[in-house]
Every structure is written in structure tokens, then in C-alpha cells.
Picture 1 (cartoon, one colour):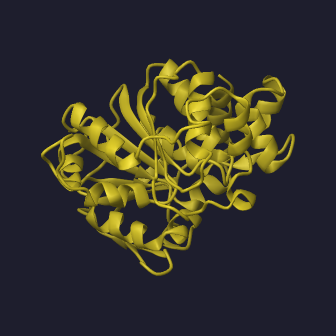
Picture 2: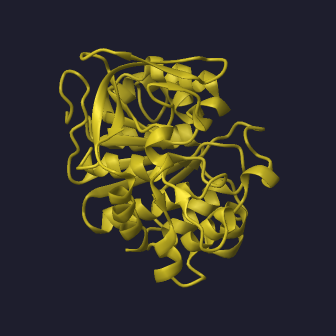
Picture 3: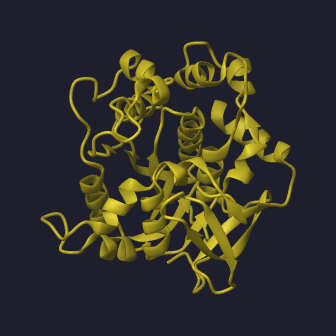
Length: 310
């Protein structure tokens, strides 16, 4: 299975990754996509699919455009079909609209597939305990997947599919050992539902892990101004500016585990379904873990910057 009885994550090579992202509000989602493609070219992961987890109309097109830029236009992309969730262009389309309108992609004039149906298809087609889901946005897609019923894709419910087909869930969310964080706060009910009911182990890379890992400088030093990931960072953070690396840490952990940067603290998370505030409970046999830094942020930043421009 790739995990032991306590849910500890042991990465396999290559890990079969499904990325679930709210790409657009913050540029570190684009950085995570760049890192993921670099890891795939190194043979460390296989990208099985990507999901957009807000109602914004530019996310799926932005993901598809980035995948095509990296030579993987075949990657299936799904999107949340609910209306009205984080869909204000003035707040949540800092760069994804420009990328979707500028670079070739499948979703300029047609909607992307429903994320839950695509999840069910990718999981049903995959090997048992073969997928690693990496969630770097609010968890509404994952809640709806768990709640999905048997259909023509699979006779299993969503929860049964996850239990049979998913090896581990990596979540960029929460603050540890306690506190509030944006992804959970934007949809507390789904954060509570998923953390309570997800049937495999979950590792959280919290707000505090990515905060001081500042990346992006090499985008301006090494890449041309027309590079889409450089444009994402420049439009969100400002030309030449770096950004915290919350989402990049989740992708790197999914591929390599803690490596030399982090250790895992095991236990159980409780999430307030009204505010999204998380609280940690120590338990060596618990189903959850969070990352705790064992090196300074500069070492992780150096690795992530190199992958982003690779």
C-alpha cells in the first residue's frame, strides 16, 4: 500500500499524482504545477490528472495551458461545477484569466469536465492504492467525491473508491499545532468533512511550513518574460518579487516525503466546521500527520527554485 498501519506516508517512485488546486488567487499554485512537471521529467511522479476547486471560470483553462506549455496537453483537467464559490475575478483571477486567454488550452470556449466524475474515472482506472491526491486549495471537490454514489463509472461509492484506490492524501491546509489558514477558512465545512471522513492517511503541510520558504527569484533570473509561470508570479507578487511556497511544499512532499527538510508529527486534526480553525491532538497511532521543519527554509527554497526553472 505504501503506508504502514499508522498511515505514515512512504513515497513510491513514480508516485501517481492527482493535483487539486484553486489556481488563480495565489501564484504558488502555478509554482506547484511547475515543480510537479519538473518532478515528472525526472521520473519521480506521474501526473494522472488535475482538478480546479473553485467556481472561477479561468482555473481549468490556466491549468490546461500550463500543462500544454510543458508538453503534457493530454493531462485530464476537471473543475468544480458549483456556482458562486470564489468566482470574483477582481479577487481570484490575478493571473489565471490572462494565462487562459493568452496560451492555447481546451477550455476557452467550453467547460471543463466535472471534477467529481473525473476523479471517479481516474480512480476506477488506476491500480489499488496507487494514487496520491495532493490538495492545495479548499476541499470541496474532495468532499463531493466522498459523497458521490455508485454510477456507470464504478459500482463503488466515492468513499469506497478512495479507500480502495488512494494511497495517501497530502493537504496544504491548516496551521499547526493550532490556528487558522486560508484554504480551510474559505470552506470550513468541507475541511471538517474531509479531515473527519477521508479513509486513508493524511499528511498536512501547514501555513507555517511554507511561509518562510521564499521562492520565485530564479524565475526572473533564468526564464524569459513570456514564460507563463514567470507571468503568474509577476502578476500576483510583482515583477522580481518572491512568494511563500505553501503549495510547492505539498507537491515536493508527495514526491519525496520529508527528505532532509521536514519530519512528520503524528496524531489527529480537528477542524472547526464554522471557522476552519484547526487544532492538533497528539496520538502516535493517529491517522494524520503534519510537517515540522528540521532545516532552515533556505535549503528547501533552493531546491524548489531549481525545480521551478528546470
